[in-house]
Length: 255
Image (cartoon, rainbow, N blue to C red; front, side, top):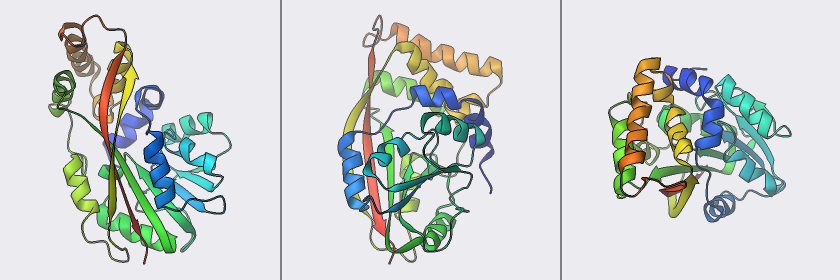
C-alpha cells in the first residue's frame, strides 16, 4: 500500500484537528449520492480514504453494510473513536482489501486528488459487482468571496503538488478514460461551514501540507491566516464565520 508521504505524515499527526475543523457534506448532497448509488439496507459499501469518517457517518443511517477503508493509522484511530460500530481497515485506492466483485457501491469524499486515477479505477472495477456504482464528492471553497480567496491564497504558496491537488486536475482525471465503467453523471450543491476564527485557523493547521512544515514555517503560515481574520473588514471582530463551499458530486456505473 503506497500513500503519498505528505498525506501519511500530515494526516497522521493532525487527525484530531482534521476532525474538528473540516466541513461535512450537506444533507441534500448525501441524499443525492445515496439515491444515485442505490445504497439500500442490503447493500455492501466501502467508503474509501474515509479519513475521520466525515462521509462514513452519513452513510450508516441507510442501514447498508458500510466498511471504512483508510490508509493512515492516525485517521483510522480517529474514525474508530467516532464510529466504533463501523469496520475500519487499512487500504488504499490502488489496493482495496476486499475480494473481487464484492461491492454494490464505493464512495470517495475529498480524497480522489491523492489517487493514481488509472490504477484506482482498475481497482474499483475489480471490487465492484457488475452494476455497482462509484460516487465521488468534493467540497471546493468559493473563492469569489474576498476573504476566503485571501486565506486560500496563503495555501497556494504552501502546498506541494499532490498527484491531483487542483480540483480541475483530479476531476479531469476522474472524467477521463475509465475502462469498465459507463458515463459519469454529476450534480452541484451549495453549502457553508460555520466556524469560530480559531477553528478557521485549525482548518489550516489540519491541512496535510501545513502539518508537515517545520514548526517555525507552520507558525508563520498560521500567523498569516490570523492576520487576514483580524484585519479584513468582513471577518474582523466576528465570533462566527461562514466559509462558503460548492460541492461537486459524480457517479458512474460498473458495466
